[in-house]
Image 1: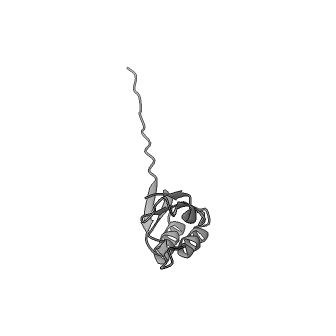
Image 2 (image 1 turned 60 degrees about the horizontal axis):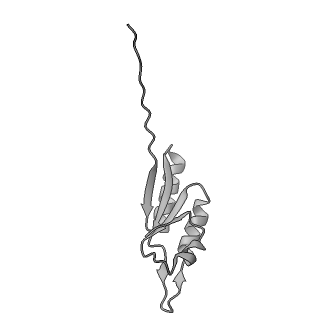
Image 3 (image 1 turned 120 degrees about the vertical axis):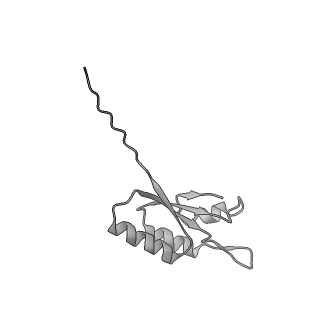
Length: 97
């Protein structure tokens, strides 16, 4: 009689959604203190429409610089085709609607 050992390895990748610079700082602090499978930080509503029709992407740029390539970044919500180029100037990894 033969016996077989079967091992299944599950790998989970986690994403976390943030809405403020403070939340991003909290995620970065936690991930620096703990071994984590975090792969992406999602940046929700970090683009501010201005009265003149332009966009303020300064918070998005600041957060992307703070993350500094340690994780993928994704800008989401309030994204239309009209503003994708402007959001892309922040150097986020992904843009979603």
